[in-house]
Image (cartoon, rainbow, N blue to C red):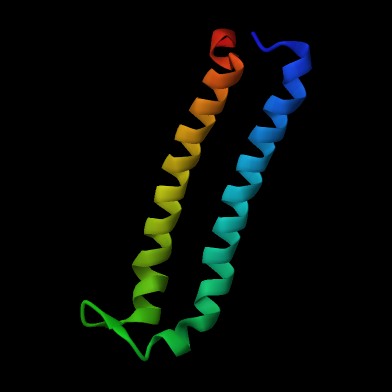
Amino acid sequence: MIDEDQRSRYWFFTLALAFGVVAVTAFCAFVLPLFAVELNIDSLLGFPLGFYLSAQGVMIILIIGVFWAGSRQTETDQKFGATDDI
């Protein structure tokens, strides 16, 4: 059970983590494709880099981000004793 004095710190860490994941997601989904034309100068595995980032790279980054955020949330839950509530 989370103590009342630690509850605000727990929610601060949780909201900061959620905001960070949403910020990275927005950056990958909206900003990286804007530079696809400039990135097409280089290639990765025979594909233009802009195409590769749009088709594969962004998806890989987002999947890694989701698993990272889940592990960080588990650590935060254990740190503040929120696992007892479940």
